[in-house]
Image (cartoon, rainbow, N blue to C red; front, side, top):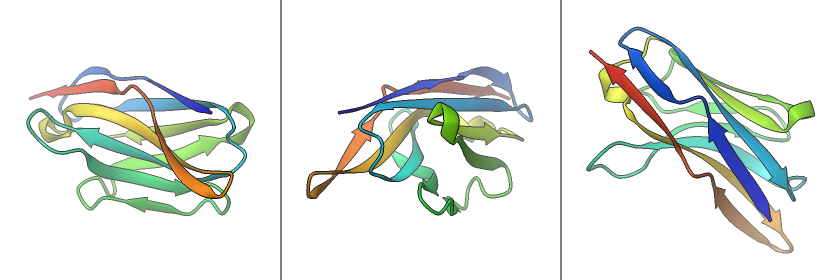
Length: 120
């Protein structure tokens, strides 16, 4: 019903930058929030940043505040995560998430993930 495709991951040195993209398609018109999560090896998936789709409000994990910026392009139905001043501890698979109202329920949709590796 909603398809999410991430891109933009890669290998970067500490202090560098990357921009992740999440292209949404399908029944996206009832989107409540879109978010980024990440999962490092041996760790649980954790919240990174969220965007309230209707009002544009944002929220960030403390670990990325001031370094990461979440944004969107409505015309392209795409969400971005600009990551600056990257640290080795930012290494993880980054996943795009959308919370969408489907009929009378809220449903979580996930992308396939994109690998970000930060070398020291």
